[in-house]
Amino acid sequence: MLSGTQPYDGAVSPNGNGAVRRILVVDDEPMVREVLVTYLEREGYAVDQAADGKAALELAASAKPDLIVLDVMLPEVDGFTVLSRLRQTSSVPVILVTARTAEPDRIVGLELGADDYVVKPFSPREVVARVRSVLRRARTPVVSDRLEFDGLVVDGSSREVRLNGDPVELTPKEFDLLAYLAASPRIAMSRSTLLENVWDSSPYYQDPSTVTVHVARLRQKIEPDPNRPRWITTVRGVGYRFEP
Image (tube, rainbow, N blue to C red; front, top):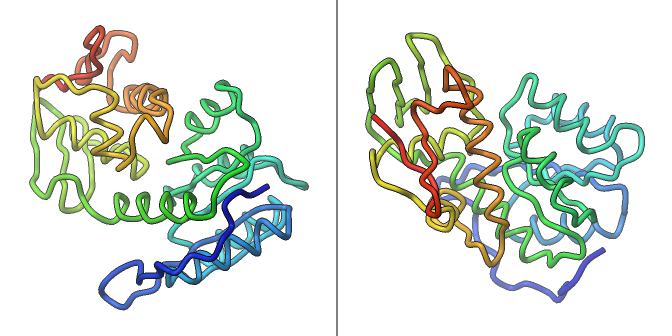
């Protein structure tokens, strides 16, 4: 289901170095796939498409997309299962597309590792904007320096995190969130500020619970006791703060 499908004439190259970014669009509705493929190709992306979850997993393995636009309600293998299997071996950015508007369904997707989501009916322009934003954040480090704390290292150049010498596997968005918070230690950051600077979005377009879910996932990976955070603390009535 789409809205606002008028032609878009603002096509630009997705990056300035001539490299083509590859997008995988997964949806069981042919019209939705056709429109999204058209809009994304106008932006200069190479686009593959799949109509079910099984084909999506096969293409994700063979085509190595830079980003996946993934519908939740799919035949063969549903979108949540596809995302869960992807996250076992890959940190490829994923934008979920769903007709489910209930908050629990959105949170499930974020907890499984989605980087963003859009709700049907949607504008193809919005999806293209989300794709551009997620790719920009995925390839551009939030910090370029190596930040070292007591046992925690955040390397912006290599986009690697180590805790007590051991590597920590983070999704691109989890890394961006940690790097942004760590770059300004002891500064309280509101969810709106984090949406604007890490997601390149705003509460008008995206649910602030996106930040809450990503913080919870990040704590599970870097905190000795996620229920008593050491690194990322909650500031009541404001948001979050990184403690060096």
